[in-house]
Length: 246
Ligand SMILES: Nc1ncnc2c1ncn2[C@@H]1O[C@H](COP(=O)(O)OP(=O)(O)OP(=O)(O)O)[C@@H](O)[C@H]1O
Image (cartoon, rainbow, N blue to C red):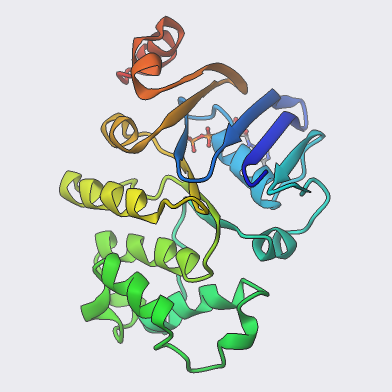
């Protein structure tokens, strides 16, 4: 009952049909990846799951709740977390302050976190596991790109979500940082926590994912284990068309 499911989602922006009836399912304790060439509709689907964009039709169901008509904060309160493709950090505030803001996204936790509680155990733990502990009091604006990229996932996990949708969290990272981040993602998993990962880096995807959905031009062209997807001819074709290898 506690999985995330999207059922027959359709979305059109003006004359452009971006999602043509997409269905997928993400289980707790697993990394479920959503991959596909540029413009395939991955971020649009993430926005529909988290409530930033409304689908034209179809349903989003999480932990037995129909989220389709629920607002972003209601979805967050039910345990749905989301990282964004573009860094949305508050310059002029410290790393710890930026991360602490994530606690306020969750109505469930609001009572436990007063202003100035940058030392909440969840904040300290997120900073430690994402190697930001030494930078906790620095202005986020002074961080290197690689470290700044870790602030958003830290901000999301401190809300203690049970399903975390990550939109290209590793884009632009060095391969060493990507590998460490993949390890961190696996460490998030538990019987009550799952991850949906949108990512272009095939090495990262193949190493961290339990199950993969492949979207191309708004249509799911394949799904399966990393091995099944790697061997799929339609997937190879979609990626070879963009010059990338599956
Ligand atoms: N708000 C919008 N208005 C109009 N068109 C949009 C809007 N958002 C997305 N699109 C279009 O929808 C299509 C899918 O975009 P989307 O960002 O979901 O793809 P994506 O798979 O996440 O791509 P990428 O991997 O490049 O991030 C693209 O053609 C994009 O231009």
